Image (cartoon, rainbow, N blue to C red; front, side):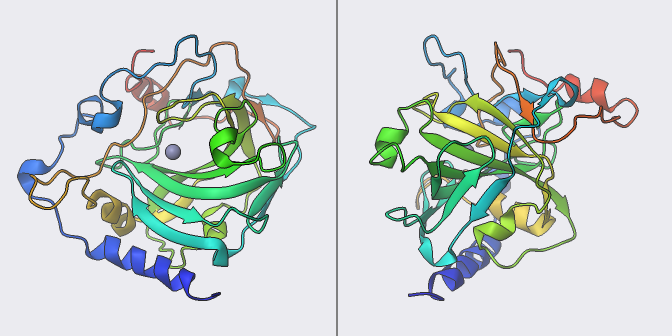
Length: 285
Ligand SMILES: [Zn+2]
């Protein structure tokens, strides 16, 4: 039923915007590490894990790879199925029974099907993204999750395999611009530049099955839209209200990995003093 599901996404946005505000008592403080969602509060590890995510991307240490192809994204908005709250984020799920919403190219050897997208965000604009660039956090990060339907019969099997998943990460930055249409292709910046590295899921089971493709350019969203995320609750009716914020996994060690760049890496000059300040925000690894 083309045309039915896209308005459903617009309705989601409306619901997020009109969601009830939290009570002051339930509001988290301004301390990033103290405010983590319960899912990430106890140390999460995978024994012997060598390619865990998220990581800090050091711009000047990433290596330009001239053989990296452009990423081709082809999404059919009518494959959008529904939206649900899984307790730590909200997921927008897609019909992945056929190759109607797919990505191909970039670092990928196969075509990957879109399964779902979701966001990670913070209580305030100073943090919220899972990945960082030169230790800089963005207020939120979008993850578009795809699986390798060429090599594996199901998403569940792909999750367990080294080349099973491909996740596009897009940073969100607050500005005065609003986006109204919630078609996933319009959530991806037009700039083709990206970083890529071999990593893992950032939620249990943390399997090391993800080819990460992190877009260099952030997308810009209205501050009200970030606030709409923060007004979501992860408690049920009758419980003390707790806002769904700080739903990101802490940074993981890079270990023996190289982050490849699809673009010529020139050192970006941070604002004076910024590198020092941001470095102090990094958790101990
Ligand atoms: Zn995610």
